[in-house]
Structure formats: structure tokens, C-alpha cells
Image (cartoon, rainbow, N blue to C red; front, side, top):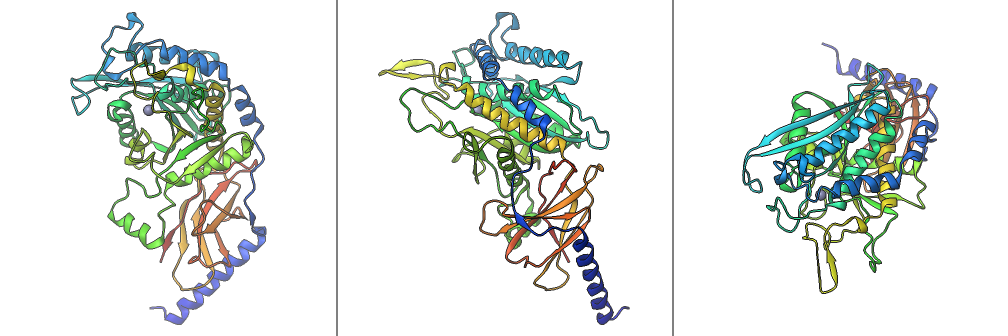
Amino acid sequence: MPTLHSILNGIAVLMLTIVLSVALFSQPPGNISPATPDPQIAAALHEVSPARIQQTIEKLVSFETRSTLSSDMPVASGKGATAAAEWIRSEFERYAKACGGCLEVKTDEFTQEPGPRIPMPTKITNVYAVLRGTDAANAGRIYLVSGHYDSRDSDNNDAKGAAPGANDDGSGTAVSLECARVLSKHRFPATIIFLTVAGEEQGLYGSAHFAKMAKAAGWDLEAVLNNDIVGGDRTPGDTSQDAHVVRVFSEGIPSSADEKQLKMIRALGGESDGPSRQLARYVASVAKEYLPATTFSPLLVFRHDRYLRGGDHFSFNAEGFAAVRLTEFRENYNHQHQNVRTENGIEYGDLPKFVNYAYTANVARLNAATLASLASAPAPPANVRLLTKELQNDSALAWEPSPGGMATGYEVLWRDTSAADWQHVKLVGNVTKAALPLSKDNVVFAVRALDAKGHRSLAIVPLPER
Ligand SMILES: [Zn+2]
């Protein structure tokens, strides 16, 4: 049995080794500043077209209703959810043809048994395109953008009435399609999936089926961007809309956390550090890098969704995936879930004329920049730990190398426990441990991987190792 003294000596030697190895590579800590934009990603963003987004939304509206309950309407009628799904599929196939078959176009189709808002067995079709990563060791990492193409009017059980759904959620569907169109002209080491789902208005059925499929298949799905109501409603006379802001909602405590994980979150003060919250912070950092803050920027809302409301990101969160929701700054309830009509001079209904296409294009750019940045970056470091064997005022972190071999270095991030976003960064080099003269009691740490071009992974908050 080693004596306590020899153990302490061993630890002291280990700590000295850490400090020395870090000192060789480290830079002084600095405040966070945006990375240099990747020219390939900047070029892709340049391709995003408000006119194309307008065409997509007007085409979706032309199906008159995309209520999931309309799915047995014949495609030949040019109306209903199935005709819309067929068109989305043909659009993805058109992009695939233009990129020499770089996109695999797929459907996830199933029959939903009756439930609260499903009166009879109903076909639900999710349509998606896969831009497979080019690096064999990294193609297993998947980043996903989604919008729901189904729509509804005032009566959620009405399968036939006009339900244009231009903003909710033609806009999110158009974002997913536009990301597919512009990003399929480029290649990335990791995989990107462009998804459109149905059954959202009926109770998130399409996304739930897809997320369960991803979980069952063991996908390494690292981030989901759910775009729902990103049309930037521009009703004449409304002075409260802000076309420079998109809200990004994220859960702090993972929906999938079990009792043991919840206990750990409470003990560590980790209520604002779940994977979805880190994804939201990543979106904010990408915006600083690629979209000038003066014209368009995300507003991070530290809440799962709008007050007591929900969306397709819930389905992914429930299966343990990081997922956030993007929504316009101010919603107009005269246009959501309303029969198209005019009453007392007020126009009701989710019509294309209320959509601000330039705004939706900015949302598409933010999505495309986030997906491309993540798919260009190394995987995050694995098994990140904060070493707590001893009570001490310094902090020692250790991790395993980023899987996939793309990382050329690591950065330690930290912030005050009361700060919303990362405040400081220290490049520690291509190492797997770091010691910082800061007390872990007073800050929150994270570690991220980067490559030689400055692409950064998602940040991983350490777990304590005793
Ligand atoms: Zn919606």
C-alpha cells in the first residue's frame, strides 16, 4: 500500500508536469474575439438568396393546405401535405443533380396511430437530404437543420381549409432547403442533414419519429437547429418587430437528464451549461464571425421555448441531443393558426405577403454558417474532466484527444458563474491537460478543439474527477 505521503508526492509531481507541459504551449488568457471567417463558408453565405426563399415559400403556399391530416389527398390534385412532400423531395433531388449526386435524398415515412390531435391513422412523411462528410473518420458526426412543412388553420382538425403557413413554417422549411442548396456546392469533413418534417402541429410527431430513429441507429447527432416561424412578420403598421434579431431558445438542463445527472447539475451549478445551451452560445459566436452584429444577430433566450409553448427541438432534446429553436423576434398571432379572413379591417391568416424574405435569408445565413462551421471543425475533446482529487485554489483540467484526428490544439474557456456567455479563452496547445491559476469554485470552465484554420468545436464543460 502506498503511503499517503507518497500519493501526495505523486500528485505534486503530476501537477508540476501539467504546469510545465502547459507552459510550453500556452498563450496568456484573453477575452473572446471572433475567429477569422473561413472563405469557403463566407462564399456559401453569399449564395443565400431572398428571391429563392420567396419562391420556395410561395410554392409551399400553393399547396393550399399542408395539414398533416390532408396527407391522403391525391398528389395529382396539387393540394395537401403529400403533394408538398413530393415537391420538397423533387427540390432536394434538383440540388443533388446540380452537385453531381452529393446529396442523398431520403424519406422517413410512417403511419401515426390516432392520438389527441390525430383522429384516424395518418401517414406522416419527413423528407431529408444528407450531405455526407468527406473525411471517413469524421463523417459519422452529424449536424442537422430542420423546419416543419405542415401547416394548420384555426381548427387543427381541419384537413381541407386554406392553411397557407407561409411563416409557420414555410419559412423554416425554406431555411432548410436554402441551406441544402448553398452548402451542397461545398464539401465538409463531417455530415450535414437538411430535414423537413410534418406532424408538428398535431404534436411534434414527425420530429419525434425522426429523433427516435436517430437515437435507435446510434447516430452521433451533435447539433440540431430547429427553425420555426422565422419569416420576420412585417405587418403594415407594426413598429415592434425587429428585423435585426432572431431569438435562439435553448434548454439549460437537458430534458433527457436522469436523477443522477440532475443531482450533479444541482451540485455543480450546471443549470445553464447543458449541451443545447452550448450550441446556442456557438450560434452566437458564429454570428459574430460571419454576420456583422450591426445588421443581424441572434438574441439568446435562456428558456426551452416561448412561454409554455414548444417545437420540434423538444423531440431531439428528449432523445438526448443538443437542439435549439430559432424564431423571429416578435410573433403576430393574427397570422398564426388562423383561417384566412378579414374581420374589422384586420387581415388574418399566414400569408406570404407578411413574410420578410430578406430577414429569412439572414436566418438561413446564420444556420448555414453554424452548420458549416461545425462540420468543418474537429470533434470536441472527449471525456473532459476537472480534477478534484485535492482541495486547491488552482484548477487542473484533463481530456482525451478530439476523435477523428482533425484537432491541432485546444482552448480552455471560462466565465463568471453569473455570466451568460464565455468571457475568456486560453489557447493551451495540442495537449490533453491544462492548469489555470483560477479557482474552479468561482468560474465555469469548458474545453474546445480547434484546427489549424481556426475552426472550433462545440465547447464541453468538464465533469469532476475525484
Ligand atoms: Zn410552427
